[in-house]
Length: 325
Ligand code: GDP
Image (tube, rainbow, N blue to C red):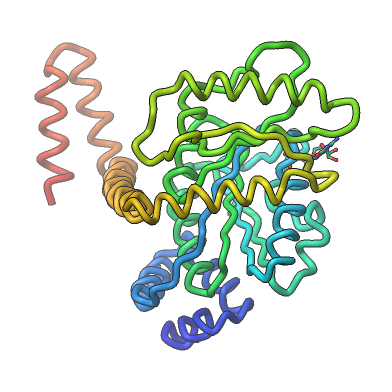
């Protein structure tokens, strides 16, 4: 199918066309990559904007359950919802199989929902670009909300936050009174912390955890893109579907405020710049992996190791010979 045709079908909201488009952006083949770039460029000016919501949490906190309940709630309100996953690890472990449709049973049967598992791949840079492009395709296909799920492993939160308008951190109630080793950097990215499983026996622990995090959030540096009271921590139960409309209300309040105050566009602009820089960086890193360059690095590395060349002159030689094209 030619790109214009595929693009038109995506704009018309055809799910199969969207799936094909995503397969194209996920492909490693050079000819596919070129077509994917053409497709994205062709779609460039459609002017649709979805609300992109990033969601992170360690395996078992209830991400799939939350996405299912939250997604169903949104659909109940007439929204179209796409779910994508960013999983940099090829070995999926710990019971969290991101995007596994069987874990989002109801949602996957909804005509207004589109669920796409993560492309399997080990290299985060590659996953990031593919996911970002998949988000753009979902947006072109007219989805109102795009949920981007990631398991809490190192850098993947940053990647997801950089493609989201809102970033949610899902936590489970803690047993003790310690913050659950959530890194400060991740806390700083969160717009909303949702303490899940606030039901049954876990309710008291959830209440404690929520107030601990609310306290911790108050200690963080105030961000320019937040109105008073944000970022905030609240309790939900994905299983009992409680707290979800309240969480959605908070998200809409935040989005409304950011739109009115220029921070919505500001954030998207900053993200575009970030991804431009990343693409250049990734392309240069890929260049370093080319056979000729690697052999040269090895040869010069030996000379540096034996003291025949200084590190900086060897580095300059590589840069001038190979990267200054
Ligand atoms: P994920 O690995 O983060 O996707 O977590 P899952 O959605 O697969 O949930 C992990 C486990 O927690 C499952 O056994 C769920 O049934 C359970 N769970 C998820 N949400 C809730 C909740 O709101 N309350 C309770 N009590 N259990 C939950």
